[in-house]
Amino acid sequence: MKPRKIKDNIYWMGSVDWDRRLFDSLISLPDGTSYNAYLIKGSEKTVLIDTVDPSMVDELLTQLENVSKLDYVVSLHAEQDHSGSIPLILSLYPDAKLISSPMAKGLLMEFLHIPEESFITVSDGETISLGDKTLKFIYTPWVHWPETMVAYLEEDKILFSCDFFGSHIATTNLFVSDEARVYEAAKRYYAEIMMPFRTIIKKNLEKLAALEMAIIAPSHGPVYPRPAFILDAHKDWIEGPSKNLVVLPYISMHNSTKQMVDFLVSSLVEKGIAVEQFNLTVTDIGKLAMALVDAGTIVIGTPTVLAGPHPNAANAAFLTNALRPKARFLSIIGSYGWGGKTVEILTGMLSNLKAEVIEPVLVKGLPSESDFKALENLAETIATKHKEDGLI
Ligand code: FEO
Image: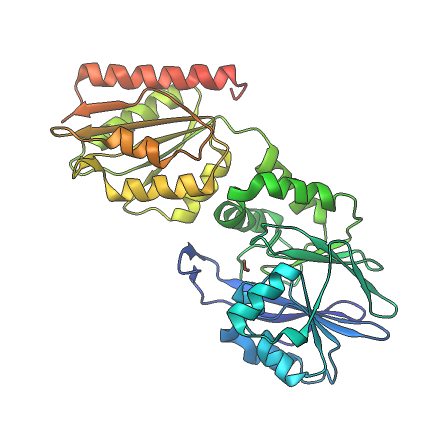
């Protein structure tokens, strides 16, 4: 694709990666992604903000064919999907200086072997003049690594936010045209890489609140012509109350745990509680992560196998613990044959959660009438807790 004009002398560059289905060899990308770079031509200086994943650098090079001089390349974030092509760009524009935070400088030198003399480091709040335009750099740690910063083009009120506010969508739309679709993709993105750091990200949001923003230009997905849309969404995900929702990842080997799941779901729904259940043999983990953003309660369903939780359930617990959702309550259900330490292992794996553990229901073999009664009590307890917390 050719460079696309955002405003006079401000262009989107980069690549739309329609085919990529996995990020960091971990995160599923059902809708592909894009790597957005931005070219700003000031009256005196020209700057390229970020680059693209090295696998797609040829497209960026074609877009730069008519750009005879770059004064600065900015690296807002050292992860290679944005920085990986910087060495090649610097080799083509040997007079360009690389602007980064001091922490990013260290990472870029280590990850990409960029020589120290290429860098100009900027402090939090520092500005650089491009002549008739001014770029201000604002540190925003943990969106998505500790070194990350954003750049604010003061005269045009454009925030270049890199991973912050991104969405993994491959699209030919330069600007967001379907907010509902982007909301879904941005929520998945937030859940998978930002949610663990939401306390710090809340501070970043507060820091940016002072800026007047006409446009937010992230490094993944389309550009936001209505920043309030994505700012409000992040506020809700980060600090909004949990929802009246039970998220229930589960796996069953011989249908006993499945019967328990079915009974519990039915009982919760009867009590006015929404449930999202995820069979871990077929689940898109990104969908589970998105549901965890809103969960009031998490219940993990697992049989006991090899004296502990099923490995798929352990994987879901590990992910949940790493993502640190704001869920208020947690429980475990499942069936065992002759013993094991399923509850101890799983609760130990979920120690990052600030959630109250509601008495688990573990049953021997196929659930009996008394076991269903225990599940009914669990549903009742969850309903009571949700009412006490104002979720119902
Ligand atoms: Fe899009 Fe953290 O890289």
